[in-house]
Length: 285
Image 1 (cartoon, rainbow, N blue to C red):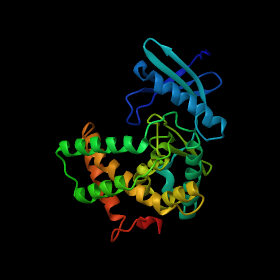
Image 2 (tube, helix red, strand yellow):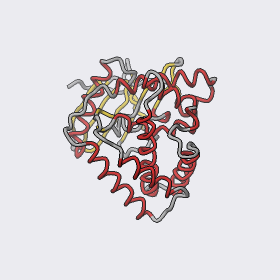
Image 3 (cartoon, rainbow, N blue to C red):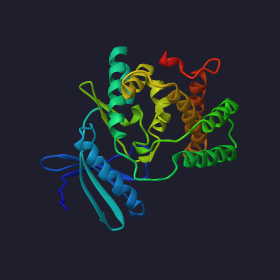
Image 4 (cartoon, rainbow, N blue to C red):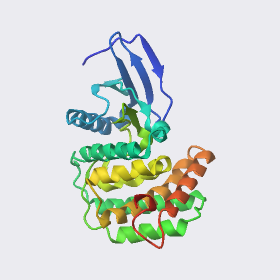
């Protein structure tokens, strides 16, 4: 196991994770260090291994350097990558460039989904169980969304037409907030919520990107499918956005009422995407 000598370590406080994160500088390089609980050992080992595969496939992510367990903690070291926050700077570009960056995001996501799932679970059944639990948590939260009936309808309709689901590795939180831009090239960060499941479920975070750039979001879908997606994708997009919207309320309560209001606002956005029960969101037309 290689050990590094750091001359400076700066804590990173951005993001929702409870892990400790640092920007650490050696004499010759800059690293990103993530320290997490040993309770997450198995999933962190899998995540680190997959990230190595993705880096070798040419995915523009942080290069994994070192994985070690020390004093009941997992210490992961990655190469530091520089870039401007996509979330903060995407609107500094013209619409065409925003779209092209979105196409890059879609193509990168396709590579991420090239890593097969290690699970033999029935993903459709698993999704239905998860959806039931998330809806129950939403109802028990005591906060009601304005378009609650609409979202519940989308969940019911979507789950009834699932069929057999393909399963792959998932980034888990794929949106502009976890991307960087460097010289008009896109870089992807923060795999901390990675999991396995239907690759199309990955688009449940696209509402966060639509808020910043509909052009980027449209490009992401076109880039992923190398053209227009099938109707089945749009049907499932409605389902996944509805599940995620309902579950975002009990999730946000754990942080602050400010975050609850943000999630309520995003729910309003999603409801406005569709007219007369159409499948294709307005920003894709």
